[in-house]
Length: 188
Image (cartoon, rainbow, N blue to C red; front, side, top):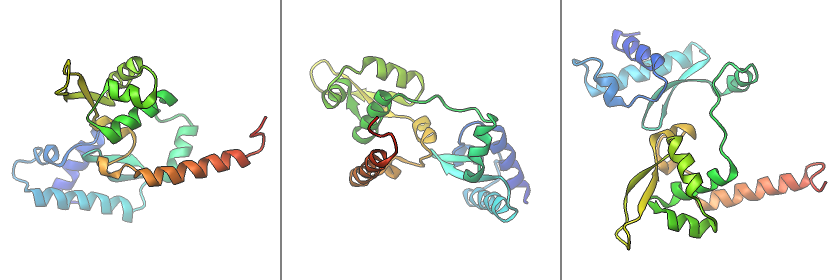
C-alpha cells in the first residue's frame, strides 16, 4: 500500500465516526483530491482482495472502516461490539416523519402522528439524530427539525436519497404484516 493509503487507513481506524474526504485530504497537504480518492480505492481493494473481516464503506458523507456484514451477528452475539440503544416505536415513527418531510415543525409532526411529540423530539435531539435546522415563517416562527449526519450513520445511509421510497415502504410493510400473521402463535 502507498504511504498515503496507510496514513488514511490509520486515521480511519482511529476514528469512531465516518470521516469526510476533505478531512482525510487535510492529513497530507501535498495530496490532491484524486490521490486521496485513489488511496481510498486502494484501501477498499486491499480489504476485499485479501479477504479481511472489515471493509471500507462510504457512509453518512464520509468513510469508515466497518465489520463485514457476515460477521456482525457473531460479534453481537458475543457482545464484543457496542450496540446502539434501540429506538421506541414512537421515536422511529417520529424520526421517519422528520426524515421524509424535513424541514418540519413540531405542530406538523403532531398533526401527522395525532399525539404530542415533545418528549420524543427531546430524546431524538439528545441522541443526536435530529437537530433544529431553522424556523418557519408562520405565526410564532416555530422551530423546524431535520436529521443529522449521525442519523445517516445510525441507519447506514450515505445520503437521504437512499431512504426507501413510499411505495417501497408500503410493499415492505405488507410483506412484514403478512409474515407476522402467518407466524405460529400470531393470534394468541
